[in-house]
Length: 142
Image 1: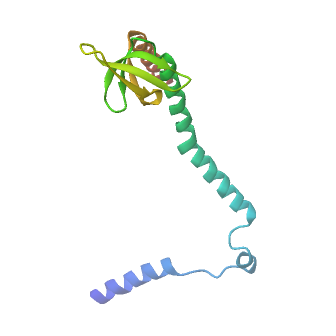
Image 2: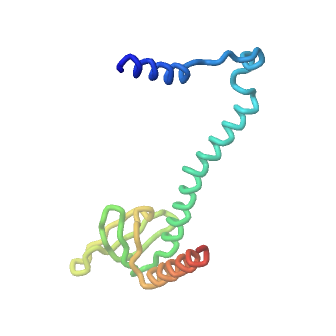
Image 3: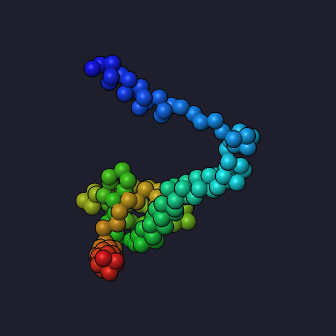
């Protein structure tokens, strides 16, 4: 019984590892030629672009849109988790001053790029409109 099983297994596995003899021309050009190499590099570059560069551009556009929407007296959240009200800002220098404590008039200076979220009514309404548009687009695609 065991011998029959081993024999059957051997007959099933050995052909998987067997290699056929290649014609003479395939032995001379094993990679399929320079054209296949160029195509492979081309597809890898397209994949890298789609996976890394395109999403980064999208994030940069969103960050710039957020920075452009900041106004004096907007309530903002920084990347470090500090919530404050915009007291002043200098977009040329890339600095923003936040009032973090109203009672003691405590102000802190940050880089504009450290702003993570803006709490203002206009942005909230715009986000709601964008969400409605996305829902409409999803409904239209179905």
